[in-house]
Amino acid sequence: MLTAFPPPELPGTLTVAVPGLLEHRVDEPLPLASVGKLLLLTEVARGLTGGALEADEPVDVLDEDYCGGSGLLARLSQRRWTIADLARLTAAVSDNSATNALIRRVGLDRVNKGAEELGLTQTRILDRIREPRLPEHPPTFSVGTARELAALAQQIAGPAPWARVVLGWMAACSDRSMVAAAIPHDPEDDTLRDVPLDRLWVANKTGTDIGMRCDVGVVRGTREVCYAVLSACPPGREFEMVQAMRTIGARIAAFTM
Image (cartoon, rainbow, N blue to C red; front, side, top):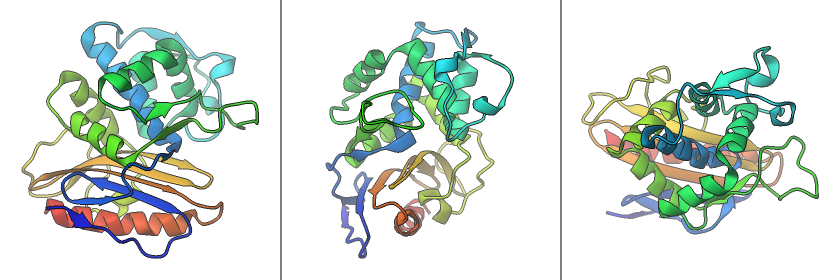
């Protein structure tokens, strides 16, 4: 049964898709910040399971790949990593430099074509990660809708070999500060879990930038619930959006218990 979601007064835009249960402005495109990395991770996983990529293939992180913001690679001395290493860093700590190296290796056109093949028509990566992003660059890293990202989460929760790979990467995500903050779970449990469970388990990917907070995930308990919650607001008002996202997380937790 679909439940309407009237959000409280907020300083920005909130879009919510919990398929079959909760929706609000689900088709409104918003900047995604690092949630757009899910498209990259999905295409990498499809390449690994389809034979186009090898998990242990070494990739040199070039000077042009290094980027500030989230991640660890910019602070580490090693400059050669495997494709699997870079994907894990992208998923677990949203590493911007690892993301750029993977985009360069896989190709932005291939990532977006793969998204189209999975049914995403409004959700795209527009550019590499840039810190800072200048006027001559595309205005944001990625854009998309809650409906399409929740549908992608449902595919990631499915039985396809590539999906199991992505779900495993998402289970190691270190950011549970948004929707997942109100879902009682063990954030260090990165072992794939299948329903039904006697407790709750979360795999997710978040995005954080000035004026943006986004979270897409899979929650498993006595049942499975997939979600996408995207928000955009004026700079300095992000925590108010996060509080609303946590309210949605509490509702998702109730759906899964």
